[in-house]
Amino acid sequence: MELLQRLRSEHADILQALEHFEEELQAFEEAGNADIDAMRENLEWMTHQPLQQHVHEEQALCRALASHEGEARRTAEAMQDSTENLTETAEALLEQIEDMAEDVVVPRDRFDALARRFVAECLDQIEREENELFPLAERLLTDAEWQRLERGNGYHAPPLHAQSAALWEIR
Image (spheres, rainbow, N blue to C red):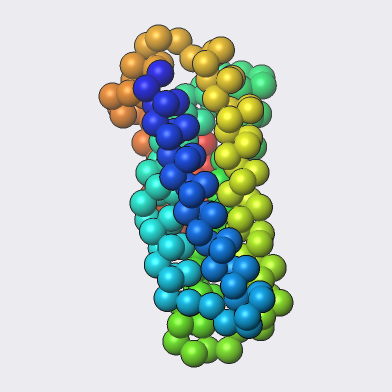
């Protein structure tokens, strides 16, 4: 179950990056301006480093669970949906930050709402993984399934910035 240890470790990295992102967001709210480049770099790092790898591994875990019936399949499908929502939010937020960095006017309340939604969705996703997905995987997946996951064979997921939501469907 090294995969779960890796995913939990990635949670710590993601939470740390979210903390830094929230600090920049707070500075933006209080002072009316923030280091947009730092916000962009932080978000790009999150979406291209820990989140991308994490999503790939989480989706592999969901695919393994989806092969089971009942609660496992429902949980995997729900996680799939929330991952898709988080991905869309991250992409929209990154687009807004890039616009701001290029001096495109972005309504402050719209940016703030999207940034807060991104943070909330990340925190919710981590909580659901820790409290629902991981315990279910520990309980239901066989040794052979864990070995297959560890080898990375057969449970491939698309990258974070998939072009089509259809690519994210559990097959």
